[in-house]
Image (cartoon, rainbow, N blue to C red):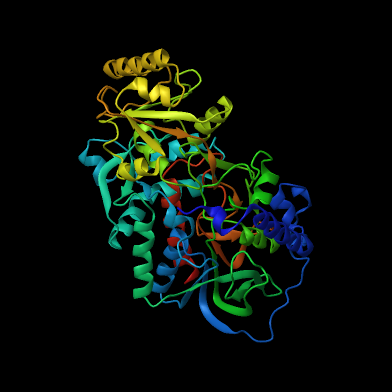
Length: 516
C-alpha cells in the first residue's frame, strides 16, 4: 500500500474531521454520540429537531443508492440489482474498493470442505462462541449468529463470482481451530475485483469521486435520497458540484470505519493521536457515520477501536510485513521482547490481547521463524526485498541485528521446540499447528511488530435485515447499513478474517432487503 501521508497529511485529516464534526453538531445532537459525550441527551425528539430541506428538483432518480464500493457495498449492489432494482454505487475516492481492496483477503468459514478434507472439526456454533469470547460478550447475539451461520454460504457466493482461494487454511489468533481461507494473492483485491466484474456485467454504475454530504428525509423520517458532490477531490470539501439523487427504495451505507479520522478516533481513545499510524486507506474518515447519527441512527460501541498487532513499524500503513507476522511468526515461529529475548504473550491470542501486550513493553516486538516456518508466506521475497523482514544464517546473527540477548533467545527457541515435541505450550498454552516443526533449519527470518489502528468495531445499530435502527428503537425507513459502519457485531474485539464474512453477509442482506 502506498504511504497514506502522500495522499493526505495529518493537518488535513484533522481539519476535515473538525469541519465535519462542527457541521454535525450544528445540525443535531447526534454528534454527541459520535464523540462519546452526553449520550443521555439523545432522544427521538432531538433526532427529529432538524426539519428536512428537500430539493425542488432531483438531478437523478434511481431505486437504490449504495455509498461505498468495498466488500459490503458491492455485495449489496449486486444483490439489489439481481432482485430487480436499479442501482448506483457512490465512491468518494478516485479508486474503488476502499479498505477492502487492501484487506488481507482472509475469510473465516465455519465447516468448509477445506476443513473437512483436513479433518478439522468446526461449526457455526464454534465460530459464534469464538467471536463472543473475543468480543467480551458485547456482541449483539442475533447479528453475530447471522455472520457465523451464513459464513459458508457467503464464502461460496464469492467462489461463484470466480474468487480463487489457497488450499492452506490458516489458524488466526482467537480462533479455536484453523478456519481462515486466504485468497490466491493474499489480498482482498481478489474478491473486490471479481465483485467489480460482476457489477459491470450487471450494468451497475460506480460513480467515483462522488461524495455524499447529506442524507435526505421526508418529514416522517423516511430516507429518500442524498445530497452529493460530483467531481470531489478528497479531502478538499470545497471541491465538486452539488447534486441531488433520489432513491425510490432507499440508501445503503457501506462506507467503512473512521480509523483515519484522527480527531474522531482520539476523542474515543486519547492515545490514538497522529503519532499512531493506521492500516486503513486515507478515505476512512467517518463522515457518513456522523451523518447517520445526525438523522437519528442509534450509536453502538463507538469507543471500541482495534489495533492490529501484526503490523510493522518499518513501513507505512498496512504494508506487507503483516503477512510474515500473521502467517509465519505468530503461527510457526515465536514472538519475543527484544529487550529480554523471551516470549511474553500467546502469539495466537486475540488481537487486543496481543496489541496491548506489545504496547506494554514500550517498543516493537520481534517475530521469527526458520526456513520451514516461512513456507506459507506467499510474498516472502517481496517482504525481504522491502527490508521489512530480514534473513539470517544463524540465530546469533538474528539476535545481534535486533539487539536481543543471544543466550536468552536460544533458550526461548529451545523451549518452544520442546513444547512442540510434548504437544503442549507450557508458558502460554498456544494452539499448535499439526504441521508445525521445530525452529531449527536455517536460514532464519525475523520481522518487527508494532500495533496500528486497524478497525473501528462500533458504528450504527442495525437489525438482522440490515435496517438502520433509530433512536425511537424502530428502523429508519429506507436506510440500511452493512460492514464496518455497523456496530455490535464484533463487540470489544474483532477476530481476524471475520470482517470479510461480516461485510459479505450483511452486504448481501442489505441488497436483498432494500430491493423488496
